Image 1 (tube, rainbow, N blue to C red):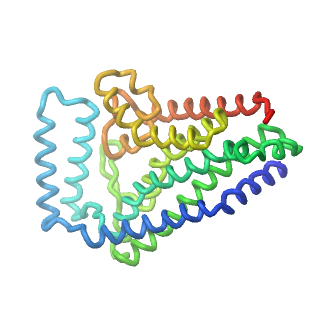
Image 2: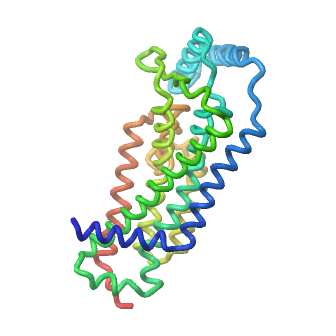
Image 3: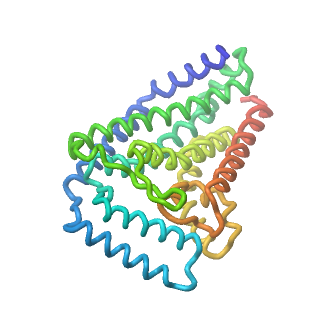
Length: 315
């Protein structure tokens, strides 16, 4: 175990010694701060939030009268009606972007930038050892190939965790400075067992971050697999980045025509579809998506492990 810890420590040192890593950290901080400033200067609250909520309730009820409405979407509308009625009854404003919690929730969208940076780190983890010619020196160490590969993968995920923590911290500080903390006691309204309940907003924010991490973990694992199989950092970054931005679009169009699209990776990475929207394909559930993600996770890691274990290091 101490051997593995030493390997992970060594991989972390490699990551943070690179100038590019600190450039990525700086860009993440900049994106979070600039996002808060843009929200502060451009966002305008509704003149009458109660009238707007009443209009949403009316519109949702009209849609519920339609005969051919999809069951999942119908349930979603019913939940939104109940929550909005609860807002009006208890005078609880919707979460606004120009509030402390509102910007923190919106900052979860910046996780896509963290995903891109983690892809770059994961893609270069194995491939760079071959391109720099250091792979032989690495493999003559007493540690097994499996431990070496595991240490690289864990180091890439630890980098992602650190970036997520930094994003949350910077967003919280920027949000507190620009928007104040007057609304920090606002509750989050959730729909459970047919009733609307008030929950701690911290739980909702952490949930937003956690659900947005599915793409992060899967794309980092995919890039790591490509890096181990093809030993080419550019190819790994290119394929993973292309998949990150184009994959969901292609999957969406396939899902409009074919039910089997629900088995595709990108039909399941957006777990927020079960909280704030509706599934991409009828019949999909959170447990189903979690199971599919787990299977893809095992597949990607198995391919990377098998290839790295069996490859003859002749160069």
